[in-house]
Image 1 (cartoon, rainbow, N blue to C red):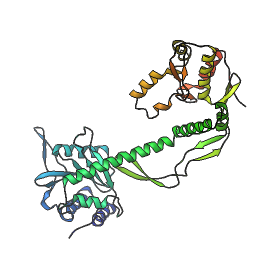
Image 2: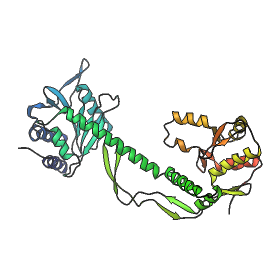
Image 3: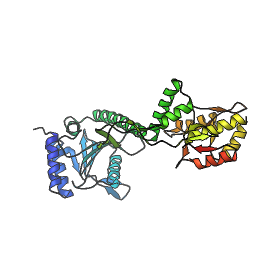
Length: 364
């Protein structure tokens, strides 16, 4: 008789509800693999593996096919809470037996795959809770019954899952970035470009943008969020992004002109100084970076640092949409990282402006 995931999860769930001991649960696991999944005498319990001259280790179970070890199983009691030590133990057994697949079976079932070309630890491919609707329940039975067990097919499955997991993680990372201040800045940039294309001046766009607040939120639904490699959980989220009126953001003038946010005020100060005092790039650096570190940087320096950096927001650290040019022809940028709790404190910009004979004032 062939058994399904429904039979297996019910057996394991019963052990959990009865609060079976680790030894009782191991006996149940042994029966599932020996009889349900037809491994018969090819499931070996507590095999002794020599380590060095005098020590041995004993994995709970090793599955053999064609006289070769295929899968190592580390088991814990069904109400256990997994620790890093449990995983390390499984990984050690896998590498001692030179197998690519490991199963952790305790309060849940987890499949790990040791990528042959990867020097890191084995990767978590999926997690199965003891529920009928567990996503990979049928796959577990299909891959881990003795008759159909095929190492190459399992390798292909794991490789495809790794690609899926990486894609899921990247989508979630991009979503999180979009929901952060970077997403708001992106929307602001797009809107500013839109209104600039309609003929608005920079000052008019700032006034327009000052009257709205951009809020980005998830749609009201449950999404699948990969929390770690191979683990997917449901997370409740709320509505989609919206624009809503809000109290006005603080805006500033420079020498009585314009309406700028804090980081744009920092840009306008340099622009005004350069207009009033045409200077070489060396002088600009001395005047501005000498008082406020990393205030300006040449286009060449910025591009070099971006090429070396893994910072996901590296292209947004400078006012690249508003490059300035020194009197000796060097193109340079002004930092965008100005404000409260930012690398550049806005108070330092205001103080420097006063030293240079300019006045940055809050608009009422």
